[in-house]
Image (cartoon, rainbow, N blue to C red):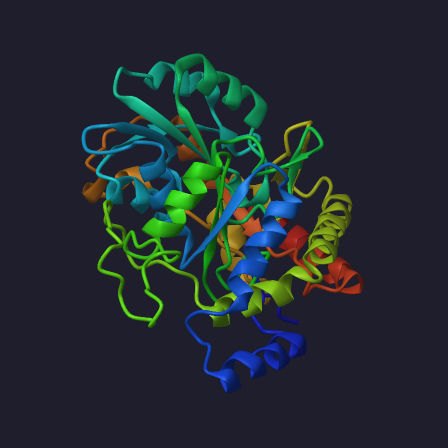
Length: 371
């Protein structure tokens, strides 16, 4: 039996929903964008939503709105996707790498304090694989030092910390609609902003800086009286992607609960197998993009699992080693532990609970064989 790490298939409901925009010709723009933003603003009350083409542009927008520019420093985690950290360079800033606590795969606040400088402008906190960071303490740290806080919740939709949804602690938060995330729109992203004025500015910047309430005149032509004082980029979410995101939202909470239940069974079934689960923080309730474990002989166990049909993964690679970031010399011992020992295990909605014992057996066998 094959256990995919992710399942990116579109549901029959999603395929049926595409009929309307395809037949109407409203492919690039349409009603789905406003409906999607409204959903997020109701779910994350007090925040303002801007749908964009992908999560990297959402993060780049958040940094721009936070006033980050050339010469500034942004604290961020090296053990993450390039889709996150590339945004720091896009903003003209320098990434300052913050280590992780390997037992919880969370942002190391103590290390962040040691990295603080007069040029630090913002902190980007990745909720690692859907496991919430210690976001209350990080919020306090940012408030203490006047730093903008951006939550990289790209694969953490449905997670919460201290009873509040992840995404409601930062000045900004970013979610991804990439095909393997909790919300599958093939691609796309959404930016939450605490301030209404930032959301208004983001909506202009996602389309070259144009104010669409004034850009066209009564004849539908470009209005010569409408200025564009700040130039943006092309990063709007298409009506097609927006339509898919809306359909995915219909059962997203049930799918998150399914993953949480699968992890509970996996934990129980793999006790005393030579592996160490990465534990959520006490106040955190993960969305479990994947289930994270650590093994001393990780690579041998990974190969055995893949051979048995379990599509596991090392998941991330330490970004600070890439010369393009210019910070290859950073010392990140916690990151090194995860890069050496961590393994991401499939646990999502596509895995039936009745198949979990077979998955657990494969994990136990691989862990013991690797010892």
